[in-house]
Amino acid sequence: MSAQEAKPKRPFGLEPSRAKPYFRPTTPQQRRLLFETYEATGKVSHACRVAHVGRSTFYYWLPRFQEGGYAALEVERSRAPHTTRIPPTPGAIVQEVITYKRDHPQAGYRSVANGVRKAHNWEPVIGPTKVREILIEASLVTPRTPHQPKAKRPTAVHAPEPEQTINIDLCIVPVTHSPDEPLVSASLAAAAGGGVSPSGAEG
Image 1 (spheres, one colour):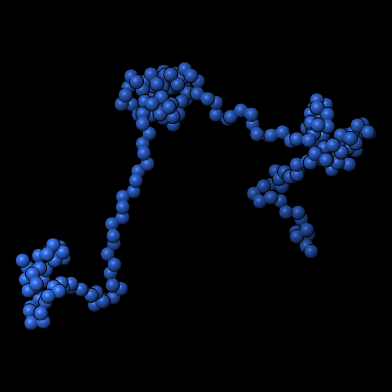
Image 2 (tube, one colour):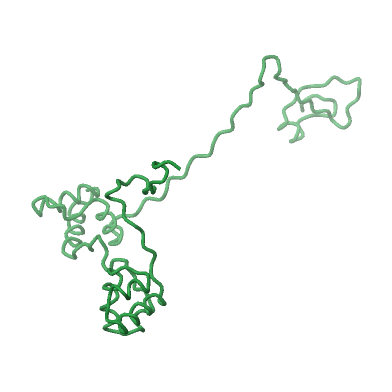
C-alpha cells in the first residue's frame, strides 16, 4: 500500500483543518459509568477514559448530575432551539397593516408593506408575505383558489407514412330495405330520429 493510499480520507468538501470528528451520542449506561468512576476516583480524565467519552461530554452533563443525580442522566434533553428564529409580528404593526388596507382597499400586499415601512422610516418591519397572512386572517382579503388546468383537446393521430389513411363512410340501411332499392346517404341524427324512410329516401 502506498503512502497516499494509507492517508485517512476526509469528508468530501472539507479542508483538512476544517474537518470535524463525529462523536456518537452517549448512552445512559455510559453516562452513569462516567460519573460513578468520577465519584470513586475524583479524576475527570480517568473517568472519561473508562466511559470512552471526551472531557467536553463530562462537563456537558456535570450541571445536570449535580442538580438531579443519576436520574438526570437517563434522558437526553432536546437540542432544538427553544425559541423560533422568526419572531412574531408585533401587535402594533399588525394593526397598522389592517388600518392601511382599510384606508386603501385597492392596495396590494406589496403596497401595504411599503406603506407601513414608510411610516417607520423605511425600516424592514414587515414584508408582503406577512401582510398577506395578516389580511387573510383579518378577513380583509379572500385567498385565491388554485387555477384549474383546462382540459386537453384531443389530438389528431396521423399515419406514419403517406397513403395509409383510410376514410370510412357509414351507410345506414333500413331494416325493410330491398336489394333493388338504391341506398341514400343520411346523417346519423336523421336516422336516429326516424328521418329515413324504408325506401331509403329521407322523409
